[in-house]
Length: 190
Image 1 (tube, rainbow, N blue to C red):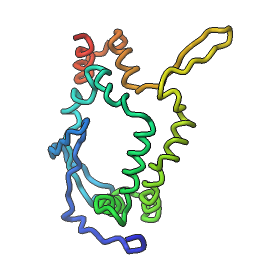
Image 2 (image 1 turned 60 degrees about the vertical axis):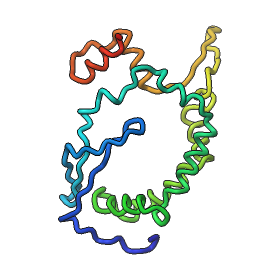
Image 3 (image 1 turned 90 degrees about the vertical axis):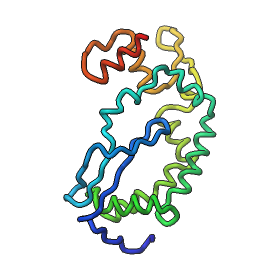
Image 4 (image 1 turned 60 degrees about the horizontal axis):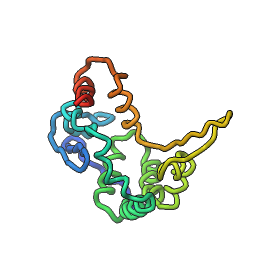
């Protein structure tokens, strides 16, 4: 497939569904129709708005099992996953590549390069370097002590944005009364 010409899709009859996946649950409802660029391929998907209440966890403690994983285990898992994400060796990736060639607006050579680099971007060495340069591995693995000007000792740890937002929201920082967000704020005050 590497040097083969991209098969021409019959875009007049090409339709597919893109599922929504929330914490391992696959939702395949075809609630909304989306048109591809150029009016070619169309696809359906679940209405994300109907699932907003399922997106946030009711408690950050719901992630406890994830904290038991080491970064090295995560890097190894992603490296193994990456080795399976090739156009030539994975029919799902090949299908995604072909579909992207007809829907993304990017040229085939750019898309081929992006798809060919999927596995390299998930190599443990590359992930480790990216995490270290952008966040700091030590900040993900625990509290990092440092001293500010004036001698104040502080400890810093990286955590998900939703944890910070949720803490702010539950502390009363969210005072709007809009749809699913309102329900989300109410759930904080159980």
